[in-house]
Image (tube, rainbow, N blue to C red; front, side, top):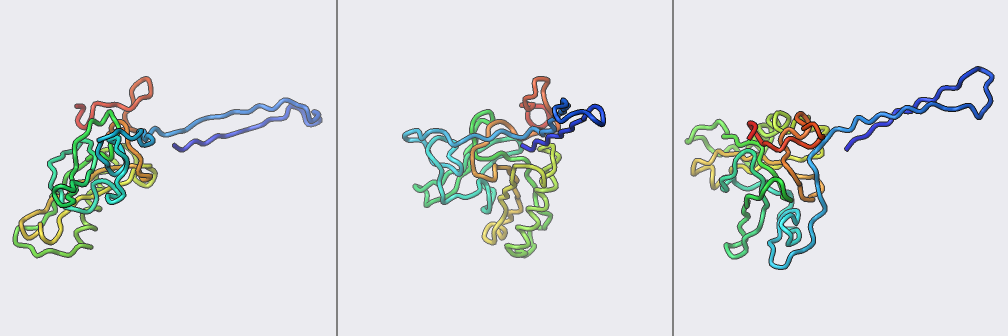
Length: 209
């Protein structure tokens, strides 16, 4: 949260002594953001996630939640999730939906199909990654309500890889997470643009849900 404080002092009378009263004016221009929380206390039997949001601690194998691999999990815009590693299935990464009002790793803010025909050859990892991020960044401000450059949130992208591309995969899933890899609490939707009268973020979700 960015806070700026402006101070001004005025001396009354050119020959007033050094004990003259000072007038100090302070104003706050803080911009509201999605809340973050410290990882909850470890809960026995709870799964490890990217940020420890589920209570089982953080899994260092994951890194940023929702980043890199194909978008197999059927999450849609406005859904929050935790990322876990399913060791029983061969260390498969899974995105598990979690309530946005509670602690969670990340939130989906867009899905986008890359505009390539089914017969198009795989353009390469770098090209797909670049196009995916470009598509996601274009949707960040309309969803969150602030520009990416001034936000505390970071963008993660699930996108096709060579093996899924050949099977027709063109799907990109865009999500936001805290750059310090601590859990988010509450939706990121319009956290700046829409505030309720008491100052809390509007919790309705995309489209006023």
